[in-house]
Image (cartoon, rainbow, N blue to C red; front, side):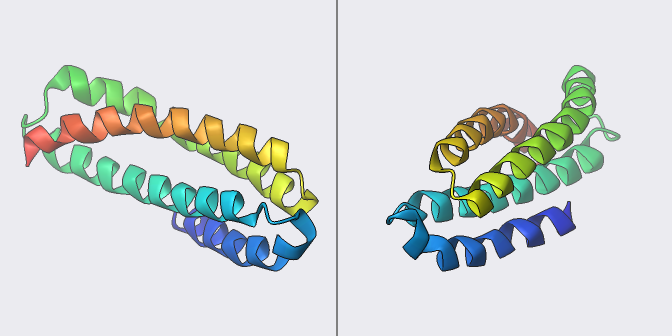
Length: 122
């Protein structure tokens, strides 16, 4: 996941360089790249919280089971988002980048529910 974060951050540089070629649409792409890095970081932090608090019972077993099922799904879907987004940025395809951003938003919403649940263990 760390590698993914670094690659997403490198997209910021690519997006910045491509700004002149994309008719000023780079702001949307930059914001999405920053959001993607934040979502990836939140997933790693949330996973750490579940690993810490599930064994102690501070997070309900049912919630731990839901997280155990969700996290691999998150990793797959984030990977798909990243591949689509990277291709869109490199190809200058704003529409595909925006579609990927919507998919990331949905994934982020799901992650937020797990993150908030994990806060009960703190």
